[in-house]
Length: 224
Image 1 (cartoon, one colour):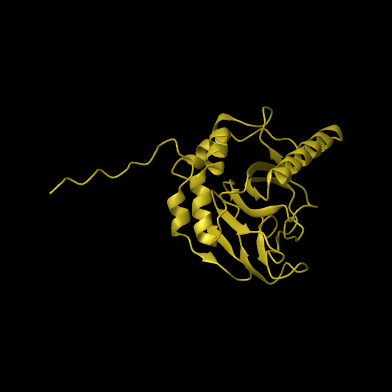
Image 2 (cartoon, rainbow, N blue to C red):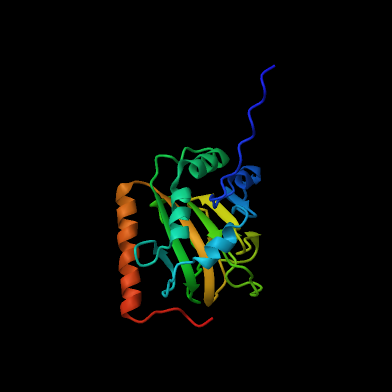
């Protein structure tokens, strides 16, 4: 009998553990969503923490010459690649490959952020990957899956913002989510699947404008 082919060895440079996504169960209540306890490959969290972009403004920013780092450039390539999109397409029963992908990164949060919303109609699907080594706040800054657009309680799920926890959901008119106020360092990577190239270009342009305005008006990192 022919010898079995050797098992494929994991790439030591890979940052994502997509097998962990395959093994996580999606939920449909109160809307489709998926929580992956740890989407990062062994050692990836430490590499990303050591090379986190030097962002000084609050909110999500696009990765460019000023903000990107070698490790995050590699992460962006994996997040935009077909393997992640294929697995999420299977989980949610919809082909997400035709939609362009945008990666943005957050380092700082302000208390006014986190209001309950469903995302704009330009978005098709969103994944959030949290990169905080610990989280002492008992409620603030913890994303909640919500039942309506008014109440933080009750909630269906509260996402721990720790060490590679990932949360994904297709956008809909009832995909309510948000978190209680938090001010300080809150490390998150966001992947957004957008409806088309026009939506992508508009989103990138808006992000660049907001980053410039925050720099001009002195909205630097809030005190932790």
